[in-house]
Image (cartoon, rainbow, N blue to C red):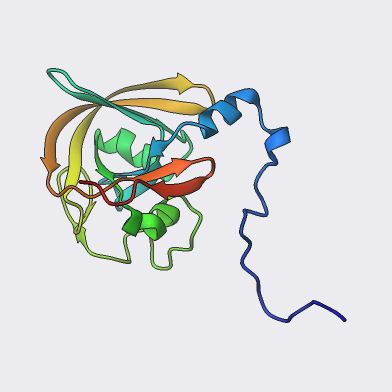
Length: 180
């Protein structure tokens, strides 16, 4: 008896993922650290740009700062370098498709900002449903590993709502579940 059934299948694992045994020790370490999933956006000419970023640190201080590792060859970096500013929005478990779209893992017919509602800010578009986001001024960048370390000065923060964050852990999205 043939167990083949016609039609597409969805894999329980990523069929294109690098096998664990082929990953460097550094990559294996990084995979064992949970990271927040954020959306970085920036105004640009001719249009806004954005990128999903999980390597991020927020440093309290006067002024507060934000640091992230991004792809130097991304459209986001070209636009952020030109505009000198960007918005950072922490994503929630409801934003998984949004994260995939801005990571280039999901199609975006009509452009990255064609779906959903967006609030226009001086720092870049922010999802209209987002209760928390930061407006940042670009303060510098330098190569860091295979990425570009981007530093921004946090100029404005909106922190409303208490949604649990979307996390990236071991190559997959995760969430904390309900928070008190």
